[in-house]
Image (tube, rainbow over all chains, first blue to last red; front, side, top):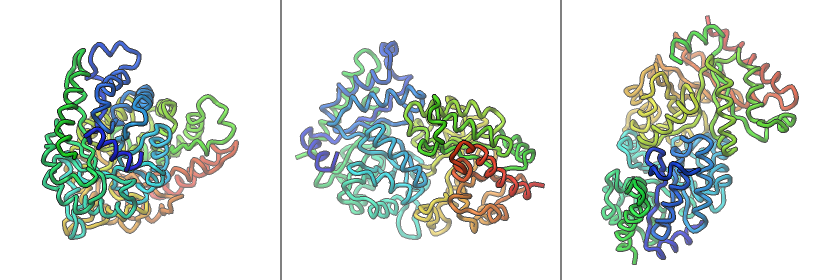
Length: 268
Length: 268
């Protein structure tokens, strides 16, 4: 999916919501555990309940890997079920030497046909470039993450000048373009969004940490939005585990609806 | 496997060689492609040919993921076949927010029973700690990697003081101990090993980049060895693809033997 199609979808749905499919076995409602593929059945119900309210889905790979080979089958079925309308993100946080990153890219872009993959920047240019080499696919690079540990290295000043996350962004902007590169910026840093928009006015930002992790949507929209919206705001647990009974999908829809309504105010 | 058992194995075998099982489909000898599980059959032959010459095996997960669910079955069979004698490393370079890192740790330590997993430090303490919480398991943290991109961020001075890789090491040494934490230091930086031993005199270092990537074993041993040896030197392509015909395992053994002979000189 290219940038124009993503923006068109956002404007049409008045939503820049990404639903995180962090499907944990222990949180699947009991009545689904008797089905042949509980993870897929759970995802299918969540997707059916939220399809018109969100523009992207983001399975976190940890939750699928943890189930062994069956988890990858569940992932494949989930991706197929999502289809072409939504932007899909493999939240994998991969990154390795060049020939290895190339294989990871093939896996997520070709074997599993994701539109994008999250990549960790620590290993530098040749660990990221192989992902950018795939036409019409996206890298979503970790810059300033939502967790407490983001303060350990990401905000330290590098070479007496820029915080590491800014150096990562500025370097990466020489590797990719707003057409194939986004950044992960946690919603738990609302004070940083004005700065980040000065660094990268045009790039989309994937913003985790709204809801369970405490990020505030209005605060980040105030400085994070650009003329093309430019944000994908992810919510995972706050939506998919809004309920735990037979009506879990209705509860998930209500939670997604609430976020989408807040978002609609910002989309003219 | 604990530190004492690893050191005892190194002294017994006069080897600190780790064989990287980066098993690429396109490089599997033709006669194995007709078997039911070519990746496992290749690994099995390599393991049989090198078992007495090395102390560790390191499958790089990218090569297994790329084969879909079948790749994970091949990985499981490989781990089972390696058995208890060797130190096993899941070269996965994972790292995510806390609840997600915990799942990755479960996957590699419990589902696949690896002794250790490589972890990327960018997301900080709470992305690494869940791996360290598993008793008798190891984190091998990326510090100074072997690839060209290691110069993009890892050697930049943080807060006017330490290169990022050194800050990563010093912080991580407050999270883990020489009993459950190692560092990845690329063999392509032989000039850095003296410094690194001043930072971390006791920790084991996993050293990739010997052979195909150009690292020199004698140079890194000169400064990298400590009183407990303290090095695991990895070779992947230089060993497993030393041959490509019916005798590929013999060629792999010869390549491993050559490295082990060099290593034996350093072990009294």
